Amino acid sequence: MKKTIMTLSIAASVGLGTAFTGIPAGTVSAESISELQKKSQEIQSKQEGVQNEINQTEAQLNEISAEKAQINAEINRIDLAIGDTTTKIIEKNQQIDEKNAEITQLNKEIDGLKERIETRNKLLKDRARSYQESGGMVSYIQVLVGAESFSDFIDRVGAVAVILEADQDILAQHKADKAALEQKQAKLEKDLSELEAMRAELAELQAGLNVQKEEKNQLMTSLLQEEAQVNELKMSLEEQNENLAAQDAAVQKAIELEQQRQAELRKQQEAAASSRGTSNGGSGGAVSTIPVSSGTFTRPAAGSITSGFGWRSFNGGGFHYGVDIAKAGSVPIVAAADGVVSRSYSSSSYGETIMITHIIDGQTYTTVYAHLSSRSVGNLVPVSKGQVIGYMGNTGDSYGQHLHFELHRGGWNAAKSNAINPVGIVPL
Ligand SMILES: [Zn+2]
Image 1 (cartoon, helix red, strand yellow):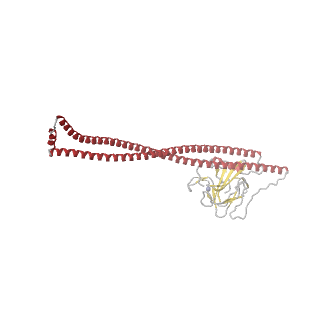
Image 2 (cartoon, protein in one colour; image 1 turned 90 degrees about the horizontal axis):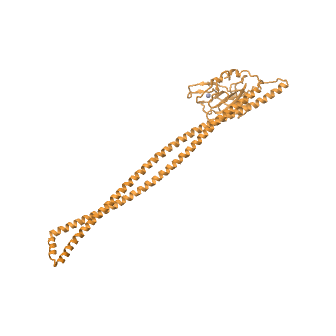
Image 3 (cartoon, helix red, strand yellow; image 1 turned 135 degrees about the vertical axis):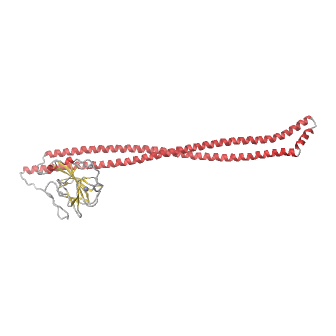
């Protein structure tokens, strides 16, 4: 067995020797029953304490659940915001594409106008040049000189001017159009840069939301871890509670047995017939049986001691709260003393396990038999010293067939604070 080191009350073992020596059968009085009842009350108050702790862990689990729900809601909200931002980014991309298309179209129009302006310019220059080259200016003067009257002259001047102005007007119109288009182009480019700025802002917002989501996810992970830890604690508390309940039931059974025994004793005393016998329910036939000792305790199994009670360096170190007895083959395990089975169960660490509660001179003791291959007694069954309760095995946290035997002065608890060295008490 590998177990966490916890407080161990060595003082509890002081003076044990006397507690176990010579308790003549039949001397147990009503006093022992009241002590058992006191013991039962102690166990019940311990159970209350453990139950309080279980309630606390439940409250913690509820709190964690509420936090989880809150974080889930926040994650959902962030997801919605991310979805919304993504939609907006898609919209902005569409708008940017549209603006780009408009700008491309506009650029084409501006290019067309530039071409027309150039053509018009060239035409005007050509016309001016042809006037000079062909003596156009002279004929223009001649046109004016050839006027028949002053009003005809005025008409002729006007006609020439109109022709010149028409050319100039077209050119001016083209230039105005070009300026307007360029203004429009500037506006579109401004719109475009605004859209791109908005898109960049949205992308930043989305990145921020992703960071938030990552943080919430991490928080959720740590909550799940905490929940697992609290659940584990709750499970161990529940196991402790079950053990306490089993111990209490065993004490109740012991009270009942003691009352029956005392009634029987009184009857015998009344009949003045002293025919008491001791029963040493020995078993025969099996390969590795051992003789049952005549004292209060007997050895729980045949075999050699492979690890004693106390600190040890192997197997990861730590405190060994029991004694290991190993032997190959079919090795029966016997009850170390008269008592009542307080627990017969399968544990992940202890493997197949039996715990027996013994009441000796008003004091409760618990013996533990771990790593069994099989158990042959159930809960609350009265057992007598030397009675076979199962067989040696290698179940649970065990490396090779052996019996892990523990003795507790009082009830068993997860901290094993009542564990004592069985050497000197149990003949090993
Ligand atoms: Zn052990």
